Image 1: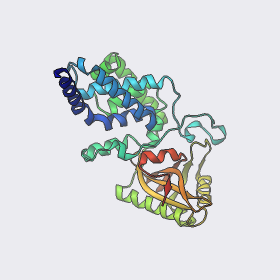
Image 2: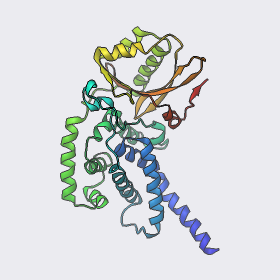
Image 3: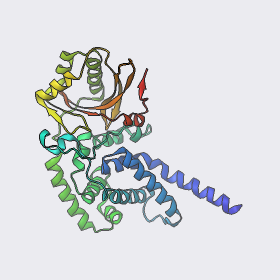
Image 4: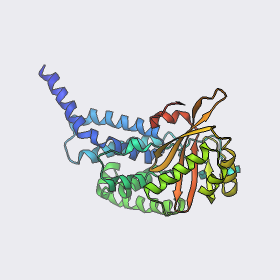
Length: 317
């Protein structure tokens, strides 16, 4: 009986110490892997491994550092069996795009932002989760990616990162230097972003344009050099082609219903399309890149299976 009581106490202590880090670990694994599905699997495996090893945890590092060590190495193992995840525009020119690709997935803000988090911490987390930046991380070799994220995003000391990855501080500093150089080549240029309320206003206008099939309103929202991507299609559009394709997708008033949401720290919408029976069925999750001069990029993830992640039904109304 006493042994059973001790086990329950141990389980309770483990949960009390580790559960506060679940959301930030999910964000870290998502940055590493580019997939919310894969990230959730790795976080689950991390907690299982940590629970099994908890009896031997001697407190030589903080619980947070210990969990990040397990999570990062589990990500590295998972990454060995997969190719990098990408957006269509990351494959080169549209006519050169590959068809057999693992696509990047969006992550709902609600999964990775705790209500009790400090506003500054939330802002930092959202900035490091922007879709284009996640796509850029995927260009880095996995260990370089791990070093960059642990040092630059999470601000772990180089000595801690070296212990996490079973290497030296010198090797960590070298990997970070190479990762920074590579990221500077592939990361998008920083653009001025509007405030939260202003970005939400653009999202509301985008939704209204689609629901009302208002081509003029949509064109006013899009920058002249806007990009449109629609994975799992490998074809993507830019500039005038992107605008023309987006306008062509409007259809007639009432074809679309859109529900505002948020993904990757960006304004987003869940798009429902009316079928022949006048039923609105899940079509895709739309993530907008909004800058001071309009919508710079639209990524439409045509994957109804994502709706459950956002807490949304497959049929609307």
